[in-house]
Each structure stands twice: as C-alpha cells, then as structure tokens.
Image (cartoon, rainbow, N blue to C red; front, side, top):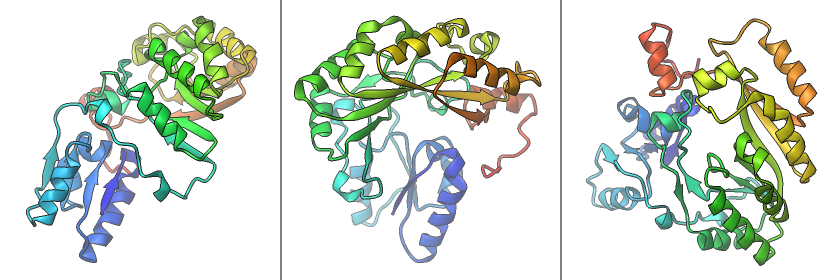
Length: 302
C-alpha cells in the first residue's frame, strides 16, 4: 500500500499506515513530509520513498516482488519531466466534475514558508507541451485545475501551451496559480489564457504589507500598490481572481485583520482565502524560528 503525505496530513497518514501494517499489509510512505522527515516516517512504514517517486517506484516494486524491500529509496536528483507518465485517470471516480494536471514542477521564488523551498525543488522543469495536450484530450471532465506552483513562471512556455489548446479546441474550463506581476503586465498572456478556457487565477498575494513581501516572502517584483490594477485588468479579460493571504508574519500588527479586509474589499476581489503562517519542517521559516526557540512542538497535528 502506498500513501503520500504533506505535513498537515502526516498524523492521519501514520494512523492509516499503522493500522494496515497491523493487518499484515506492506506500507510505503512518500511525498513531501516523508521526504523531509524520512526517519520519522519509517517508524510507520516498511519503506520510505525520498524525493520524486517516478524513477524509484519500478525499483521498489521489483525489490518487493523479490522480498528484498529496502527501508529507504532515495532519488537525489530531479526527474526529467518528459519521463513523467500520465496518471490512470479511469481509476479516479471521486471527482466527476473536475481533474488536476501538472504542466511543470518546481518554483524559483523561494518563499521562506514554502515546502518546495524546504525540499530544494526550486528549478522550474517543464513537461513537453504535446504530452500535456494528449493528456487533456484524454480527460473527460470539463474543469481542470492546473497544479503547477505557478503557470506564469515561464510565460513563453505557457503561451505556446495556450495556443495549442486553442488550436485543438479542447473546450475545457480551467484555473491555475499565477504571479500578480506577470498577470498585470502581459496582455497577450491574459488574452491567450482566456481564449484557451481560463476562468480564474489563484494569486498568492500573501500580505497587503509591502514590508512583508520584501523582507519575508522575497517576491520583490510584487508591489502592493499594483494589486488592485491587476485584479481589474484580469477581470476586463473575462477571468476572476482568487486571492490567498497569510496572517502571522512578524511584521503583522494587531489591526492586520481589519486592514486586510478593508483593503481587499476596496480592490473588488471576488474570492479570498486566509491562512495561518505555519513553519513547516525544513523550510527557511522553520529553521529560523527553531534557532530562536519559537518552535514549541513538533507534533504535526497541532
């Protein structure tokens, strides 16, 4: 049995793994949290996959069949995106209306709170566009969530993808993560995205404080004073903006909730989500707070 887990789900993943092992089932754990905390994960699994699994998984299965399963399978370099297989979507009947898809892996922004930074996945790797087109054609759902860290990291690549989606008349409606700076300044990108079926962009504004963006998040290209203009510009192209914000930065003041609410209401933001700053293990934020004695527990359920 294979279980993948991020940090917030690790306690539940361990609970499930422990129960199945009690029943005599061989359990393999993988994903971001087991990659970051492999020794911890091994306490709940027969084997742990560290890093991306595509190259390791065939070897692991071969070892399992020969009754020589190793405790750890480490793949210490990044998988060639052209070798990533398409998922067996016919096995997934949990989401009849929508499907997820990745066109790339990695993110170069290196935000201090992000676990992609923590695992060193900071090189943007693109899958072949024709592979993406074939996969989209084989998806029978009409709504697609692109699960890239950001579909705006390499705008030239994304524009080529959009053009192929338009040429193929795929008739899909889709959403993706995007960077505010690119969405503000590239009209051609917005025009092609809309024509290719985009209905909304999820944007990590993170904070309405420029000091926070500059000192903590490091997205020095993002300017709070331009966010309102970007939202209106995306709206003029017929797409919505879903904003994501984080509370709990050291630069936040007690009025951050009221000020954030008033600000984004003035922007005309259609949808917003709010998150609590969480120092996930191995991120720069965690290491900094741990050195300062501010990590009070390593119980991931709290």
